[in-house]
Amino acid sequence: MRLIHFVIILFLTFDLFSQQDLLRVQPTIMVVPFVKEGNDLRSVFESDSSQHVRVAMAKVKNAFDTAQIKTIDLKSMIQRIDNDRILTHNSRSDLKSGVIHYSGIDIYVEVEAKVVETSRGNSVTVILNTYDAFSGHSLANGFGHSPKFYTQNFEKLSEKALDTFLEEFVISTKSALDDLEKNGRSITLNIGIEKGVKMDMDSEIGDSGNLLADEIEIWVEENAYQSRFNIQGVTSTKMIINEVKIPKIDAKTKRNYRPSKFAKALITHLKSLGIECSRDVQGTNIFIVVTDFSR
Image 1: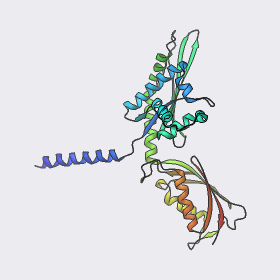
Image 2 (image 1 turned 120 degrees about the vertical axis):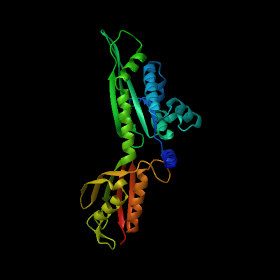
Image 3 (image 1 turned 90 degrees about the vertical axis):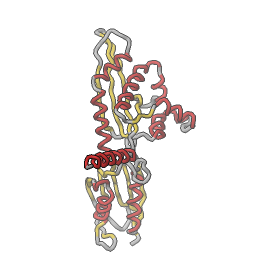
């Protein structure tokens, strides 16, 4: 009888874990070709001379699929953008940014495959870089070289180059994804005081008697992900927090938690203390300027 109860509890436990796994936001990844500045992603991707790059991309995509990390196909995403006319003809040069933004992916992997032709045989060097699609920060990288062969089959050489490091690269990327889930994303917070405002970082704010710098530090500690942040420095007119952790996913929307949301919350708090501010959010960098103090 006890054995039956144990088995029932075990199945219920497995079922609970399965439901929790389903509730987790599964990461998504896209494999894209490396594109030099000024070049068009579509031209590079569809070029006849890039066939070895496409073969390398397919092998990398398959490796992530095998590792059970959901991938988004670049070709189908480009077609969707064309069909929905997300980008105009004049903005084709920014197709890469459009694809990354429109797809809603978490990370993307850039694939670069360089052909090296010598009198002793030909080889291919493949370079992979993983980036956080949200911040653009590098998360993982790797490279490998194929042996030299007297062949023009650069597609096969690309595969051989990947065989030397692809498995390790996927593991590194998965580790970076786990770190994002566990520790959140890093942003920077720069707070300054506009010239002419009759207050500074050492001014007492509100009924608590806290200095402005202390009030900001307390708020950041309460609102940073896992209370993790680092203050680089404070002067009378400026406060620089060079790293603030924010959650990867917004618990309410189940989408990426944006730095602009963090900035808005801080401005709302300062406004409740009679402090008016302007803000500028550039990627993961937040700039807040105190423009007026009414108390």
